[in-house]
Length: 138
Image (cartoon, rainbow, N blue to C red; front, side):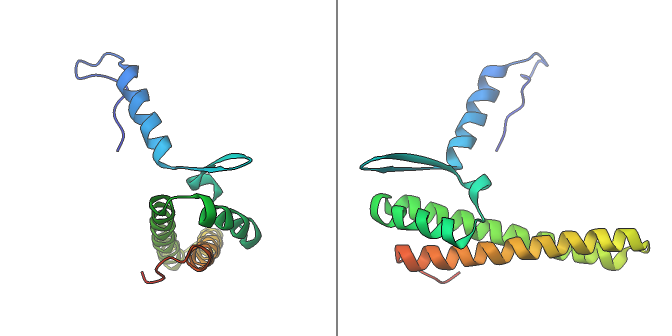
């Protein structure tokens, strides 16, 4: 989404810029209210996470989150998995096209990291679907 910091005339107009930025940040937040407190999770920073942390969070979500929040998280994780898959392919292609050994090693490392993150995201999706009883299909 996003909106420019400057208005049509070229003058700074921070009000609209900050309002839209704040809305975009709220879309990435997951708010869970339970009897002894509440939790705000920034999905883009928290996921993919370890299975232990995910299991704890998903158990709370299964009890106290709305169906809408569960599906929003599932959609976020699927998009993240797709994005990481694209990154992995892109880095692998760059490694194949590179001629310098240093670049080949760098892009191979980036591709491997993207593949690991993609695998962790896939495991988070499977665990979310299992604990919250969501549809597993892509």
